[in-house]
Amino acid sequence: MSEIEQASRPVAYLNGELIPFSEARLPVYDLAIMQGASVTERLRTFRHQPFQVEQHLSRLHESLRLVGWKNLPNLDGLTEKIHNVCGQNSRLIDPEEDLSIVIFISAGQGTGDSNGLATNSEPTVCVYSTKLPFSRWVDGYKNGTHLVIPEIRQIPRTSLDPRIKMRSRLHWQIADQIAREQHPGAMALLLDEHDHLTETSSGNLMLVKDGVLLTPCEDATLNGMSRQNVIELCEELEVELAFQNLTALDLYQAEEAFLTSSTYCIMPVATVNGQPIGMATPGRLTQKLTQMWSEKVDLNFVAQAIEHRV
Image (tube, rainbow, N blue to C red; front, side, top):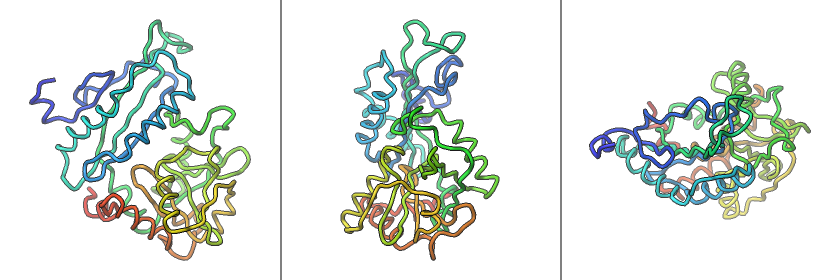
């Protein structure tokens, strides 16, 4: 790519090469397509600066360790690639907008029967970015999002370790489709095989009950970067927090609830299966944590979404 092209078009890294985003493609026999065999990370920028890069890359390496793929390329340069993609693509958006940055690594390329790796296959490595979808979040920030608990269950941890952030997500796509059929814009919140709450396709669940902030057990859900941010903020506030098995009844009885995600940060919950949660949305602790997070990153992310939605 010429310097002129690079300066005027969104770019991505694919297998070590900086290319136009529009040309970032996978072969149809890549195992990310054939089997959904890929791990991923998604982070965001604040004022065009990538947030918590090293924490996300640490979790990416943990996902790779857990899946056990062989023949991995050298990933030492991912930090630089993330900053390069961010620096180039940030110049192409409004100064008050921000980016979502995605890293994904597939298991490699498959043979004709999709039941194994091709000879000398190496995992696909990609870094790309898109503008944050502010318009999708504005109503949730103001009035709370809606959750639906469908019949579809989370994949049992005996089949797939929930600590792996991955893209084998057909069950999530179907679950969210069911949720949206019940309420436009709703998100699915899945139970596990023991009827315990887990997470949504985009974030961790946290709720307040009897004055204690509760969240599902660490071995049942993804180790969310944003959930950890909230935990640290709660330590500053001296708010009691506990990891425990939670049921739908716990959520129905909650004083307030919210989701945490690396893109929208904190999203208040208004209803679950049509039943209102708490007396007001967002709740008092949700508002306080949102304020503290905004101060931490020197950006009111709720106001940003409201002012710059498209």
